[in-house]
Structure formats: C-alpha cells, structure tokens
Image 1 (cartoon, rainbow, N blue to C red):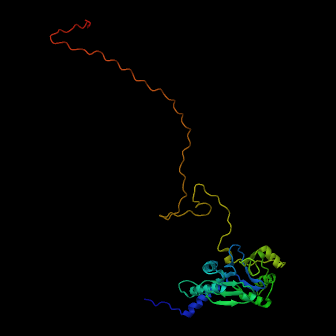
Image 2 (cartoon, one colour; image 1 turned 180 degrees about the vertical axis):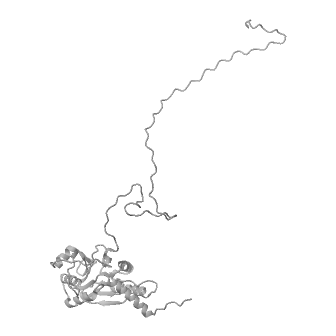
Image 3 (tube, rainbow, N blue to C red; image 1 turned 45 degrees about the horizontal axis):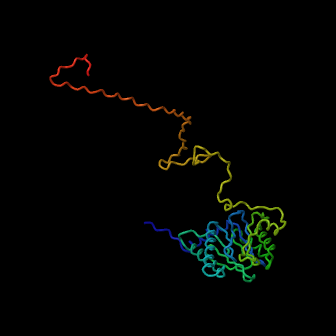
Amino acid sequence: MSTPFYVSPEQLMKDRADFARKGIARGRSVVVIQYADGILFVSENPSQALHKVSEIYDRIAFAAVGRYNEFENLRIAGVRLADMRGYAYDRRDVTGRGLANAYAQTLGSIFSSGGEKPYEVEIFVAEVGDSPADDQVYRLTYDGQVADEHGFAVMGGAADVVAGHLREHYVEGATLQEAVQLAVAALGHSEADDRVIPTRDLEVAALERTRPQPRKFVRLRESRLVELLGERGPEQGDTPQPEDTGGANGPTAPVVDDPADPTDQVSGTTPPLEDPVTGEPGQPPVAPPVAPPTSPSPQPSPQPSPQPAPTPEPSDPVQPPAPGTPPADPGTPRP
C-alpha cells in the first residue's frame, strides 16, 4: 500500500488563496465611492445583461467581481435572506452588517472546506444611511474576511493602480457628477497611459438617500452618463476578455433546413446523431411513399329489385283406384 501524498495545512491554504486571487485578478475592477448624497458604484462592463452591481433590499446594494455564476448565487441568497428577515420581523431589521456577516460565514466555510474549490469572488455590501456618517460599506474577500471601508474602495483587476489614482484625487463630500467623473477616470488609468472608457461599456448605479421612494437603488443609463461625463475626447474600449464572450462562437451564415429531416440534425455542418445501439452515424429519415390521389369512382345507379317468379298452382292429386276396379283407359277423360 502506497503512502498518501502529504500537504501541510499552510501550503494547502496558500494554494487555495493563490487560485482564488488569480481568478479575481482576471476580472475588471469595481469602484465604490461615497459622495454627498449616497454611495456610487462604477464598473467597466460591456455586457448589457449580466450585471456586477445589483439591489439587495431597500437601502442595500451588492457589487462583485470574479466568476459570474458564483457571485450571482451569493446575490440570490442575499435577496432571499433579506426578504425572509424583513417579512418575519420588520424591514428595519434588514441591515448591511447582517448580510455581510452571513456572506462571511458562507465564503469562509467554502474556503476552508477541502471538498470543493474556493469561490473566485470578492463582493461589496453597502447600505446608505440618513447621513454620510451612517453609510456602511463592507468588503468581503474570497476567504470570508470582512473589512469596513470609508470614502472609497476598489476590488478586482488592477485594484492597486486604480486605488492609487483615487487616493490622490478623492475629495470628501463630492457631488454625483464629480464622483462619476473621478471613478471613470480611475478605471481608465494605468501605469502606461490613460484611456477614455466608452460610455456604453460603463455600468453605474447608486444608493441615493435623497430619493423619496423607500427603495434607494437607481441605475444611471447611458443618456444620463453622457450628461454627467461631458466631453472627454476619443473613446477607447478595453481588449475583449474571456468573461465578455463566455466562449460563444461568432455569427454564422444561415443554413437551409432539410424538409426530410424533422429533427434537423444533418442540416448545414451539424453531423447526424449516432445510433444509440450501434453507435454508427444515423441516416436522415426517409419520408414514406405517398400514393397519388385518385379521382372518386362514380356511384352506380340503383337497380330495381327482381320480382319473385309466380309459383304454379298444384294440380288435383290423383286418387288411387279402389281394389278390384279395372284401370281406366288413358284416352277416356275422367269425370
């Protein structure tokens, strides 16, 4: 019996942490900035359907970087937890701190478990208060650690470079327009040169405490961003990332369907299905022959039914002669 390969717990945790950090670094950064009227979330996200920033509850928002399917599961779980707690107790009992603690327990359990890989995600949980001093921003890492952020925070991608630009230009109590311009400039900043991120590639949302509705979350559409950013010069998009396409193939030319194949498995370049028994490539089904239509035959005219022939009346029966009487002459008529 061979001796199993031994890995020290320190080395195992280090390998899992390196694996998670590499996956997170492949994503684009997300910036969170506190401004005078709320909390702003800005990210470069070319996808119009897969959001990195979403609403959790009335005054709570969620932002994440990393693998989409993993942080989407966390977002859905947070929404369900907030709804259940608000329904069972009171809507004021749903807080960003409580959600951050729940996320920390989940991420920490997954990271320390040896049965599955760690989540390649980092998330923000933010809650807007009645005043800037009451705002709460929590940053949670892949291993379940929680950090309370103030002013601004960055995660994912080139977080160090973006955070350095924010540290130099951040001003407390800025307006929404100033916060948006600063966040977009920081995301386009790099050590080599700066670029202007196209407006259509930006995902911007905010928790606005000045909104009269109970729900404070709002998304800033492209038309609103154009007004806030103003004239910035020629735009330059980022190089496509694997997370943008998701392995999808480009558009192909349309193919003509084969009418004789109802399953459409041999149309175009798609090979036919294999036979489940023999494993040989199947043949397209052949339509059964159809007989040509025939004209209806004329109906025969009704014939009169034959009348039964008249039956002849029976003749009188011949009585046998009495004994001792001579036979009658055949030519003599009978009386």
